[in-house]
Length: 247
Image (cartoon, rainbow, N blue to C red; front, side):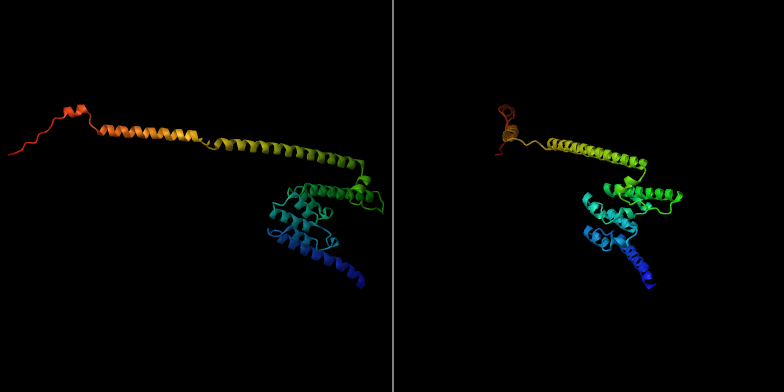
């Protein structure tokens, strides 16, 4: 009796510790000085068996991505590796499928995991309705899913793969076009900068400008001197004033 109760208590204790750790991660994830390595160490401090649901860990990851928007694609993938997409609830899967902060690969994994859960639920209900007492849920991996599900699901998954490949091709085309436009914009910017810069004057041009300025100044000075010296005609017209001496 003691051994049985101990077996039940230990998993519950691990789950409580996991909830506390996930809540703590959600709080400290808002700190912009918290490094990615420290976050990973805290998240991986517990064994995988301690978490039966990774919704709390997903909230912490999403909060960290909000507080650190400059993370690269590689760093975001590293961050999401601490989470098991198969342990997310349906609500968390729906939120993650529309979360633009997650890497595209993680979103695809979340969608795949959600399809696995839905397929398992449909298969289990079908077996129950058929009256089979012994049934096994399908293992949530890609190989057994494609082998054990109806043909319609396989066709749907093949169509989804095709759509993903098409989106990847379109994304690469958009990236190429963006790079071309960026190069053209940089080329136009360089041309504009060249046109906006004042043209450097040569030594001959600057010397000629100085000479013309000097000539103008010399002419003005000559005119001023000429206006101050009276000419001969003015001298003749001006009568001499004789000073009358009183004797």
